[in-house]
Length: 474
Ligand SMILES: [Zn+2]
Image (cartoon, rainbow, N blue to C red; front, side, top):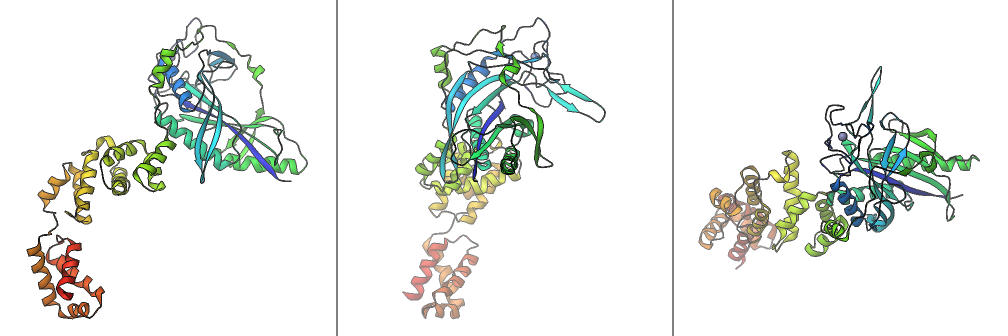
C-alpha cells in the first residue's frame, strides 16, 4: 500500500525583548547560571506577574506577518505540570483565547509556492534549562520567563524537505519583522513535530506521534525522514501505532519513546488569575500594524521584477537582510542593477566574510558601489581597475572617483597616445600584423596585448582593438 505523511509543526521562538515576559529580569543569553532571576520568574509565593508590553506588540505583529486574525480579546492561562525546570509548577501560556489565530505562510518549495496554514501563534513564558554534569544535574532559571512565541501550523506539510523549507521561511519572516533573532545556536528556536501516516488519499488522520524539542532545522528534517518510514514499516508489518511523545536522538539518528502522549486535560488549564485579559484597542493595533514589513518572499519577487536580476542573486540578497538593504540603496538610480548585484554579492559579501566584519562597520556607503559600476560602464576604468578601487574602498573608504584619480587608474582613451602605441606594436611585430592583414583576426589579440603592456594596462582595450583593426585593414 502507498502511504502519505501528514505533518504539523509547533515552532517556539524567543522574542527579541530586553526583559522577561512577566518581570524586569534581563532576557539575555550566556549569563552565569541563575543570575537573571527574581522572585517573579522563580515563582515565589505572593508575587504578581506584569506582562511585557513589547512582547505583546511583537506577538500581534507576528500575527499580521503570518496573515492571522488578531482578536480584540485574549487571555493568559496556567498550564500545570511538574518538572524540575518549571519552578512554580505551572507555565503561563494561552489556551482557549490566544493572541492570534488562523493565518498562513506562503513559501517557495521547489519551483512552486506552497501554503501552510497557521492555527495560532500564542504567547507564553520559556522554562528553565536542565544542565547535566557527571555526578549531578542543575537547573538554570535564567531562561525561565523569557517571552516565547509558539507558532502552531495545521498539518499541511507532507515531507521532511517541505518542513525544512517552511521552517526557514518562517525564520526569515521573524527576522525581517524584528520579532526574534532566531539564533539556533543560542536555542532561540525549538520545534515539536507532529507526524502521522495514512494510506494515500485517505481523509482520516492516522495516529499522531509527537517528536519533542528539536533545536535545528536539519534535525527536524532527519527526524521526519526517520519517523515516517518507521511508522509505515510498523503498519505494514501488522503492528499498530500508539499516540505518544518521542525523543529525537541526533547522534544515533533515531526517535525513541519518551512518554505516552498527554492530553490537554492532563494539564488542568485554568485562567491565570493574576493577569487581566488582553483587550487591545484599535489604536494599539494600528500602531502595531505600522511596523508591518515587506515579507522575504515578496521582496525576492520584487528584486527579480524591478532589477531584472537572476532568482539566485535575489535569493542571496533576501537571505541576508542587511546585505539586501545595502543593495537596495546601491541600486537606487543605477542603470546597471545586475552589475551592482554582482559587486555586492561576489565582492562585498565575500570580503565581509573574510574580514569577519558586518555591513555596519563598512568604511563606504552603498552609493560608492553605484559610482564604481558607473565608471566601469563608461569605460573610464577597466574591470581590473575596478577591483583595485573596490579593495581601496574596503580597506580605507573614500570615493571611487577620487581613488581612480589618486592611483592613476583611468584608462587612456586619448586618440593620439593610443595611436602611437598601436603603430609601435604593428611596426615591431610584422608577423602577427601580416597575419591579421591576411584574415587571421585572432592574431590581433597578440598586438592588443603588446599595446596593453606598453600602456601599463591603462589603454582602453575596446578602443585599442578597434584602432588596430582600422590601421591594419583600413
Ligand atoms: Zn525575574
